[in-house]
Image 1 (tube, rainbow, N blue to C red):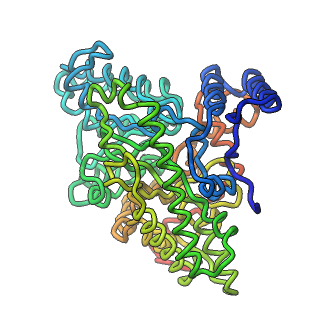
Image 2 (cartoon, rainbow, N blue to C red):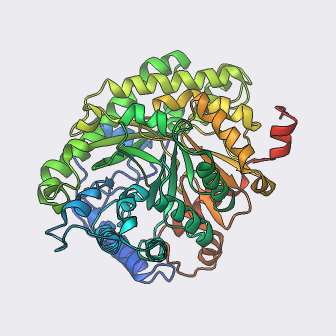
Image 3 (cartoon, helix red, strand yellow):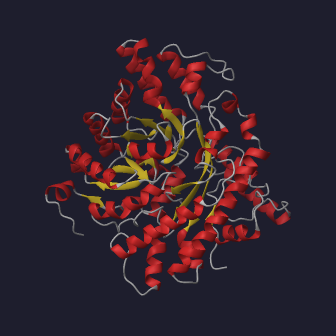
Amino acid sequence: MKSKSLMPFENLAEGLKADKLDVFKREVKDTLTNGQLTEYQKTAALAKLAENTMPYPEVSDRAREFLELGVICNMFEGAAPYRPRYVSPDYSVPLRNGSDYLEMGPAKNLYDAVTMLLAAYSYVPSITGFPVFFGPVDELLEPYMDTVSEEEARQLLRMFWQLLDKQVPDGFAHANIGPRRTRAGEIMLELDYEFGNTVPNLSFKYDKDITDRDYVVQAVSNALKWNKPYIVNHKMNVANWGENYAVASCYNLFPIGGGSHTLTRLNLRRMVEEHEGDTDSFLSETLVESAKYLVEVINSRNRWLVEEVKFFENSFLAREGWIDLKNFTAMAGFVGLAEAVNILMEREGKSSRYGHDSEANELSTRIIARLHEALKEQPALHCEASENRVIFHAQTGIDVDIDITPGARVPVNDEPHIYGHIETLAPHDKYFDGGVSSIFVFDNTARDNPEAVLDMVHAALDQGLRLFAVTSGDSELIRISGWLMKRIDLEKFRQSDNVRMGSSNLGSAGVENLGHLQRRVNYLERSIVSGDRDE
């Protein structure tokens, strides 16, 4: 074998023999005595250790080999999933109907509605142990705004926004606003600009045909200060999912009232390194075979969760109609497109480089199109939300990725000028029904001209970009691929302090391994005024 798996396939499952029992005990002790972890974080880590004593869901020998080689990576989900990776409840159901499980009646005013949502979030599972989706919070609370005075509404929303950050200390927790202006949404954007909290991560659904321009300008202004919200191509996502879709966790897409059983990914760099033929055979054989076994691994996990664990039979969320199995899918992700393209180009004796040369960029689109086609050819178990096929996702990378670029991005600090950057990324995005994010860093002087930045967003979305992350290089909030952490938390973690945000350990490693602080900075005056497109 040439490669070592990012997530060892063999685990303590295989009987906990004496040597592995010793390893298990040592890892438990290391967790208990780790001063960088809070008590909650220790509990979550211990639970994962216990889960990984279980046998992995059954797969073929060839799929097992792909896992061992690191071509397929199960994203540290654990050996035996007992809850979906991502759950996106329809929170309008308990607001409208109340909840027998929570012993709460229907919301009659804004006090009730805020109380219901804050209570509900405590009972929604995910891979992180916290909810990854707070819902379209403006739409959920807008019907109750007139039940209280203007001052009361502002105070209640202020409390709500603060408590999201304090009760859900995890950078993956995500709320949605837009595309239509609401009073609740306006206040939430104002509060988010004021607080600059890590949570909630935030997406602004934008459609220039229905979104008021000054409303989205406020969203862009927020993003230039705090690196959020994302600006989401609402029209493009509606074409895939209809109006009732969630942007959750670090920018994943699926239906509200559902979610994703799992996110398992292909490492395209590892795949190319294991491939011994030419580019054509890589496209026609290796990609197709890898897609087949990726879906097999996904199906094994879906089957275990639904049929053995019986999550949907046992969850009050399903019983009360907050979620429905028919609204669930599964995500097939990938990383390392840039490296795969560059290696294939080099093997052909060409200097063409992804993000900078048309030949390399065209190859990247061929790879994505063929992989998308191959994945959609494979039936996916318990994925009724996506017509029993997986959805395709450009995954943002994980902390152990070394020299592997997230999704379809251009490697950090090798990005072309912003026009070329958009032209590189946009042709892929139509394939990513499971989500993709593109990050563009602006110099802090752009904060004085959010209208000009919005014009760039318009151009990018019109070219087919699915999501535009507006980022500034000196914000207190650092964009870690698809989520956020505070600089102060980064420094505390580096000094071995424990940090309230459970995602801080991942963020610290991501800064070191993925170079999140070295992204190219775009200067608005040069980009817009002079129209300079040179490197």
